[in-house]
Image 1 (cartoon, rainbow, N blue to C red):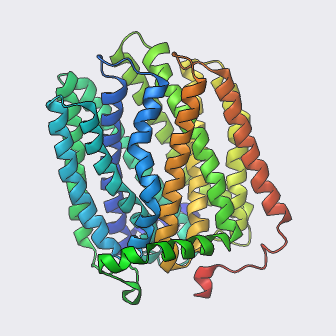
Image 2: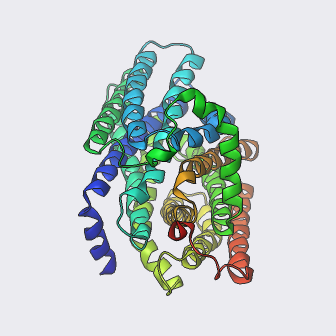
Image 3: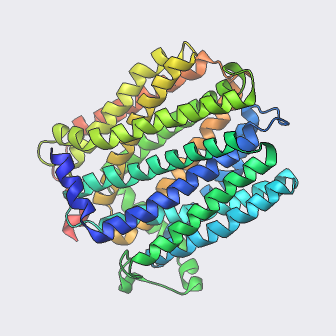
Length: 445
């Protein structure tokens, strides 16, 4: 099979393997830490969680970086990305260990959120750095599609595996704050391992090129506004990545709204106690992770079929985004409206597949169409859009959802957004007269 052959070739690339190891360890730690936060906020027996409380927690943890996120990209395009991966993960390890101490100390809730906020702040640098570094460790443009299928999806699977491990530790632990702290410490150990794995790569391997580096922080900060404007202009001049990011943002909004709904259903509608609800949520996370894995296998083949000219062409990638959003629009209401565990779990698999499939295609479009010196800030903007969409979806869900999470209005509304996304991409692919004349920036440079 071509997929197996390309995968074997990618794994023979030493630098790709090392970057992948950092991603797997880092994102598995993310999965552990996110589950620790979710169980502490949503499933603590002493808390009466509502959709509004979940939305508030998401806003506290994500929105501050949505305001600061563009600065991440400008700095990331001036700092050596390998150093960002090294020191970022080491810093998160220490901060996560501090969070565990706070959980055990039963400190005021705001102090816990400040600590969690610090950990996820550094995450903005690490995730953007991983994505921006990927083209530096593959040997051809054609294999970039496969690299985007394997690397981000493997990271998502690692986060899912980490989350599953966290569920197991939480459910088998002594219970209460001790179990929550134990899960957080597990995340701290994985962050430490990710930082040490970054030492396998040379400091200058992941770019940016030395001529583009501005190691002085003051110089980098003074040029932030100008660099951000230049990055946004660079993006908007390229229709394919602009459309791909728009579509992915809309799909992320849908995924966020449904995530809050499933959290509420697991907490109040499907289980008689917190442990059973937490186990159901863990199962949903695992099933969604299986969808991510399926997307990694299917996407390269699907993109190649949709664009016989070549898998790196944006035609097939955008067409695959259209297929993914259209599939979700058709299947999501049928599976979601019964509000029963079995069809919702099937929906979790389908949405995991289409969301990750669209993300693989979007990553490839952005990496192919954006020049290397702009990739850091564009992927930071990408990350900001993800956060804003997710938090915005949580806010909308908080307004719509009843206490038990059962809302036909939310399910139908999400289906309509998926359908609108598919139509938007279809119109662009069919009616953009200049799309076949454009050449990838990466090939020009």
